[in-house]
Length: 224
Ligand code: ADE
Image 1 (cartoon, rainbow, N blue to C red):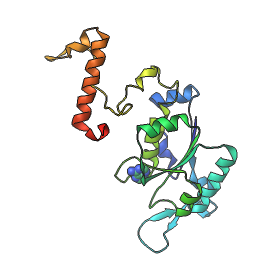
Image 2 (image 1 turned 90 degrees about the horizontal axis):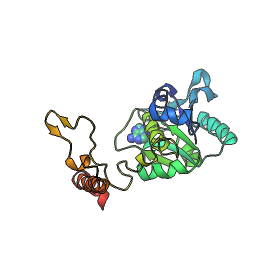
Image 3 (image 1 turned 180 degrees about the horizontal axis):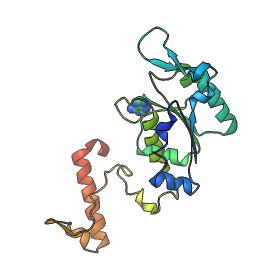
Image 4 (image 1 turned 30 degrees about the vertical axis):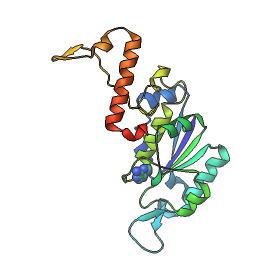
């Protein structure tokens, strides 16, 4: 999968994809992440990409021209399953969207900044508007990193143990069960005996019941 990300602060996107599973996905050739600096595409002087909003009010707005130039260039070179805009007024991103997007083809992601981007770009190009939660970030970059990470780890072949994504929280609308590692006795706190039993049926049952209990306590909305 190829993901093109458009940003006015592309440096914010350097670290999230340079380590751990996202790095491995790229090293294996399963994921390509290309970050584009919007300032390099502006027709205006001194790399200007934003301007005051019509009607007045605090906060700058990213101008349509640089965005259209870069999006047109990318669309002429590749085709995209979705052109996504990261914005707090978008649909709240969740695991089922991550699953769908991980199987759907290449993606372009626009990161907003300041007050956002000119509405005409949203109307002309954007096919999906995503929020990562009901709070406002300084820009869309960290939100885009979350979306790319959640999608990237689901691309077939990225995780070593194919089943490990299937047992994640949310994958079947249940939170994940508790996990333990060595030592079996940590300062008097013991690992549940079911996990030490070697009986896989018993272990699976214990995990399922723990998942259900956790979900009931913490996220009853998921069970509706
Ligand atoms: N940009 C600023 N806040 C955001 C959020 N919560 N989700 C997505 N993009 C954003």
